[in-house]
Amino acid sequence: MSTDPSVGVVQCCKRNAPEDLREVLDCDRYSLRETLCLQRCGECYETGFVVVDGTKVEFDVDRPRETLPAELRSETRS
Image (cartoon, rainbow, N blue to C red; front, side, top):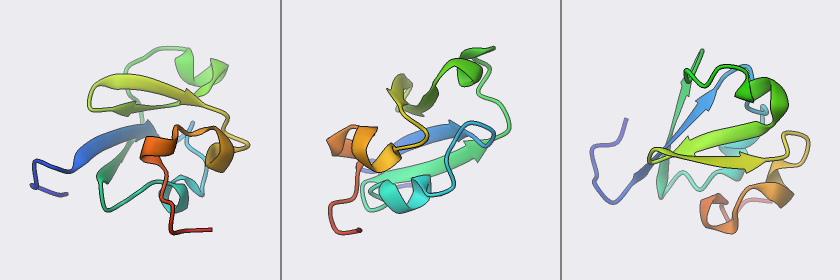
């Protein structure tokens, strides 16, 4: 876990996050924290989402590279 204040925190539910989320996420600017539950009952059954510095951000779990907001994606990975 990073202690650098310039690194944001992305939280995700292990049941809801696609396996390649870590590959898509810009790990230089964001620290990924996976948990079993984010205490947002039922939301993980409706849509894919992560919580970025306390704010919910939705994306398509089948297409995270295309639907995760650009500011969260790594531009250097294919």
